[in-house]
Amino acid sequence: MNTQMKAHLLSTTDLNREAALQILDTAEELARVSDMPIKKMPTLRGRTVVNLFFEDSTRTRISFEAAAKRLSADVINFSGKGSSVSKGESLKDTALTLAAMGADAVVIRHSMSGAPHRLAHADWMDAHVINAGDGTHEHPTQALLDAFTLRQHLSDHITDRAEGSTGLDGLHVAIVGDVLPNVHLLNTLGAKVTVVAPPTLMPLHTDNWPCEGSYSLDEVLPNVDAVMMLRVQHERMDGGFFPSTREYSQRYGLTVQRAATMPDHAIVMHPGPMNRGLEIESRVADSPRSVIVDQVRNGVSVRMAVLYLLLGGSESALGDGVA
Amino acid sequence: MTAVPARPADSFREVLDASDISRALTRIAHEIVERNKGCENIVLLGIPSRGVPLARRIAAKLSEIDNSHVPVGSIDITMYRDDLRLKPARALAHTEVPPEGIDGRVVILVDDVLFSGRTIRAAMDAVSDLGRPQAIQLATLVDRGHRELPIRADYVGKNLPTAQSEAVHVKLTELDDQDSVVLGVDAQ
Image (cartoon, rainbow over all chains, first blue to last red; front, side, top):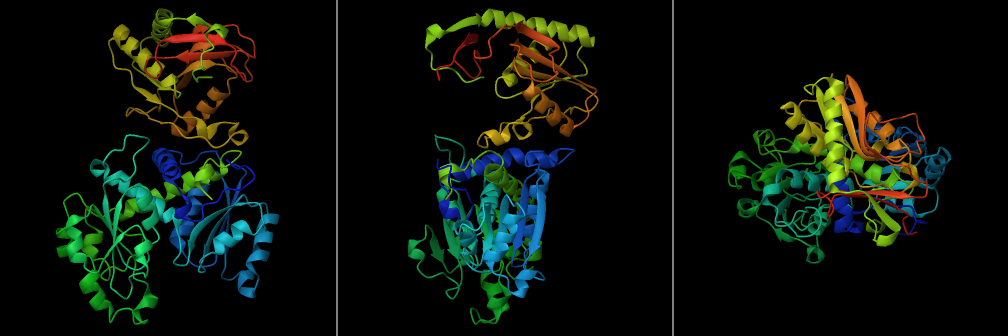
């Protein structure tokens, strides 16, 4: 383990199976904190976590905020809008400011792919960087909470591996929509992934991706253990990617009829916020198959685990598993 | 404290064998019943890793003596340690609160070796985040001295005078190959 290098969580491609499972196992223990009468542990007392959000994402921010507070860290929310950033301050000057304030970890959300990487490796500050979404590139804690939710709900359908703790081996997961950052982690943990999207939204060069592609949701659904419905981005609607929201909904929306073709044990996931009636029908989102609320709860546990493993000790416990 | 040494057998000597351990736990169980006038209000919480099987064994003996069911759980203290920042972040162990809960009950913490007292300080903090017991008591298989905090055990299996440089290793069949307590000096 290189103790000179600050550990960061920038991309799921940096996580090997061992490191990913360590995060999930830690999150599983921490999930019990939410059942305790006092939902707080003294672990990160005196540490400062900065939520640096250049782009609105209220859900992700409050999830990180809840996670940091349950571990007794001090939380500073720094929003790009209405701050000096909107007055033209550079990422570098923002980083220097945060460093001077003694930030121990910076949770960054940015519309530009690579911004977290730049913040982590430019030598501007001495803090752990956690990527909370950089454009369409990566959103590692979302991928981890999805994996956590799959493991929690489908444990009876995961084939055991002899060594270590349980991954997602033997599961078949369909991802429906246009943003696919969790493919790598699901593959690392042993799940088979099928990406379902209209041809205009299907990423190019999926040959290199560890997944299969399909244009037909109806063909895929009867064979899955889980389906992840991703949010249709509003900006896509007038970008000519598909003719109309109605057509998208007809071909790729998860309706009650479509959900009925899934195996009995299969679960429905959505990272939120949902466009009810567009990519997912309201009755499906509220059905017993839906684990969408669990995903939110698990998000806090997974983020607590990441914060604890990065900040809790004298050096990151994630070690070689994380760049 | 609990890791099994790589057995330079001569440097370690056995201070308790399997029957000593069993007798010590039986005595602790009797003392618990005597002191608490029965055990209907008791919850045992083992501190991982070796406090947990010890708590289970004591609970089994209690139910033999008093013919009643004693709830057993475990309490991980990692997140409450005062030396967290001196070492890399550690993997967490299970915290398992019995369904009966701990509010208003007598919680007996069970650990294998009582040394500095810092683990017990952390455990008491962890317990108070779980609820408000009527009282907290402490049972330990071995008390080896060298306290750094004002903490003492209510039930001690064996008082073992040690040098600061020595190590005490407790082995239990649930986790190791045998029941035994050894004292010696760890190879650096």
